Amino acid sequence: MKKIIPIIFCSVCCNIIAAQTSFSLIQLKDSALQNNIQLRKARHEIEASAEQRKEAFTNYFPSVSATGVHFRANRGMAKMDMDPSEFITPELGQALAQTLPMEALMALQSPMSMTMMKNGTIAGVTALQPIFAGGQIVMGNKLAKIGEEASLLQLQLSENDVEAQVEQYYWQLVSMEQKARTLDAVDAMLTSLAGDASAAVKAGVALRNDLLQVQLRQNEIASQRLKLNNGRELVKMLLVQFCGLKGTEASAFSVAIPDMADAEAALVAHEDEATRLPALPEYQLLQKNVDATTLQRKMEVGKNLPSVAVGAGYNYHNLLDNDRHFGMVFATVSVPITDWWGGSHAIRRKKIAEQEAREQLEDNAEMLKIRMQKAWNDVVEAQSQLALAQQSIEQAAENLRIQRDTYRAGTSTMSDLLQAQLLEQQARDQHTDAFIALQNARLAYRQATAQ
Image 1 (cartoon, helix red, strand yellow):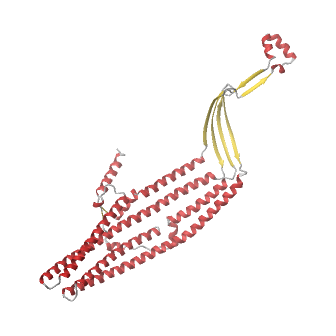
Image 2 (cartoon, helix red, strand yellow; image 1 turned 180 degrees about the horizontal axis):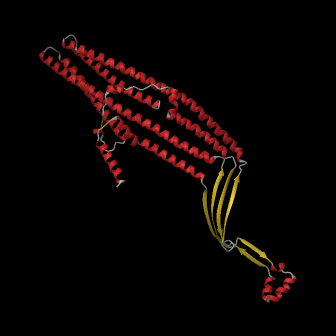
Image 3 (spheres, helix red, strand yellow; image 1 turned 180 degrees about the vertical axis):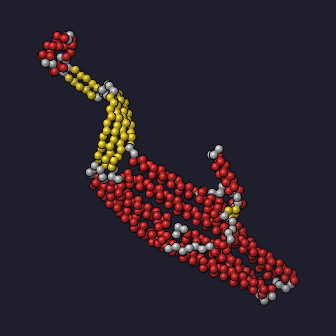
């Protein structure tokens, strides 16, 4: 019963997600972190690294092997010829003559041949425990652990990439929704202008050209809306696929629009670059690379050191036509001699790789600091651009109000009014773009400083 409850719970959650059509940014991120194929691949890498670490740990234990051989030859592998008469002294001959029959005495005077081990069985079990292997086992375990830690850092980087991609798609949809609202406002204004212009033309107080200009502008807005809707559907499809929202149709999918004022008011704290540097997964990966090359150099040294091992075995054979069982203990010492010739060059090569890793750490550390500073500059710039865009909206709205009043008073043309309306629409779109750019800049800075 306990195993059934989690299955039912997961099924219910999946059904809720499948039925849900409006998603917040947090929900989209959570779904992407669970289902994105890139993250699943990174988790598989972690599992493989963990298995490799466990595999390296087994080298501390004795290695046990068993062998068994049965053979049958066309002739004995051992042959011995002897002449018994060479070993019989005259005194022994007289004594044998009194006790053995004549046929036996004649056989002792003829040469004899004996063969052995024409067939047989050999079996044994041996356990070998390394005592000293130049530190290769210890270094190998440390290297496997570093590999597992590096896989965890790679997962963190992959999560950052996925988070950035989700936010990019999300804010792109938010931008399109805001621009769609702007088009709705423009369309409502143009509908009102078209009604006023049509009434004025019928009354004979305005030229039909004014109505045609408004209708042309309406057609332009309709074209913009068509492009916007097509782009919005495409981004929805990309977001559904990227987040692994199975069972969710792109046509019914939507994102929850945040409160723009709250999102704009949210601040990102500036961090000291040198202080945040050790917390960056990129920097930690570089440090792991240095540690790995150091261990690889030590392992290369260990390959050229003597190795010592002790062992025990239990064996059986029947080579002499009788069963023999015996146990034994032994020790082995292996000293590489000529290997130092090529081994010394391999050690120098590992030292060069270690030095390259250290230099790469120093160089990339400076580049990471520069990236943090640039990301902060982008945040400051985006905040300034958003403030300017807000001023542009206020100015464009005031200009549109003045142009509409003057057109109604008959002191300006429809062209001037439509131009003012176009400037106001552009100002609102620029404000939306500046707002989205600020959100992306804040995310880039948070990731650049590992916040």
